[in-house]
Image 1: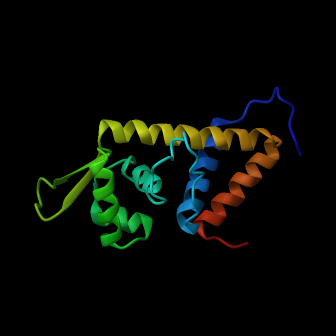
Image 2 (image 1 turned 60 degrees about the horizontal axis):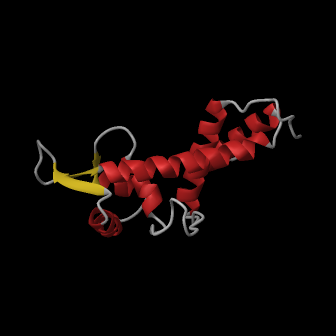
Length: 152
């Protein structure tokens, strides 16, 4: 079940596991390790997931973020207020539809999101390093299936 230290971890598996764990954290509303000095310090429980969503490709609206997180618009608006006050996100009116509010990361928000993501990737890398290549593929497959809500 364990591997020898000489076997490198497949980076695509690291990414896949990180994505699956993130989906599980959002789906089951699990609290990230909020330890003093960590990248999670001073973040509300939903802030890390929100920042990660907004860091994704495309233009994000308040409604789009809310739908992605499965949360009411009002909850997301409160979170955005908090993150905007900290200088992590910025909101602006959509160019073609002034009724729509677009959400984007600031430079500080992007830097924090990258720190959070790097920490998640490092955790996934350490978890996978303890397993054989076959077990790695199996745990990634199983966790991704759970995150998608699949049943065997």
